[in-house]
Length: 221
Image (cartoon, rainbow, N blue to C red):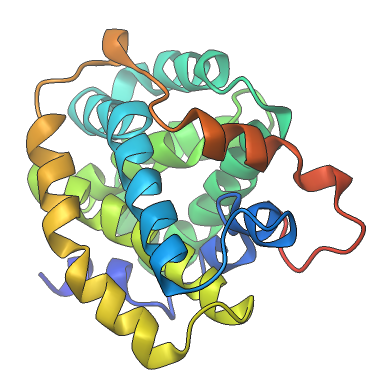
């Protein structure tokens, strides 16, 4: 539980707050404005993570020796170059943060993946390195899935605060209200495998792909 709490802490320096999950584009293009629209965007982001990332989190945790295979599957599933780059940047940041925080506690299997990611021999997508590291630290698979969705939700709401769409207390309220949605995502995708990876929020995916075209940017994606 102590390790789980440390991983969930916003102070864990994994670089997630440098990304908006496409929200920055949505705000600048007028697709999202205000708390109600942010809530809908965050809900869609949860479902997208449930269908497109959680199967890889679970597979990487259950079979870390196949991490490169799962990494290649993630690379193929992410159509947008922006989403692919963001996932790799966050994954590499997670590798550095986990290594710095936990060191040898991560075990030998983690060391092989870390070396491959640092040598750019494998993309190092976030969902894969997250799944491997969580399992290496003894985090139970269900809790790892919960933590991953928690970070997705927290990232979107944090971005909304910095983009002026929510106040900090509004963001906390929305996080509380969306907990039921996150639980529904977990239940609905509990049996989804890597072969069932899907994109269920195409509008958000398209908006995120436009990030590099913004004249001014606060986030990396």
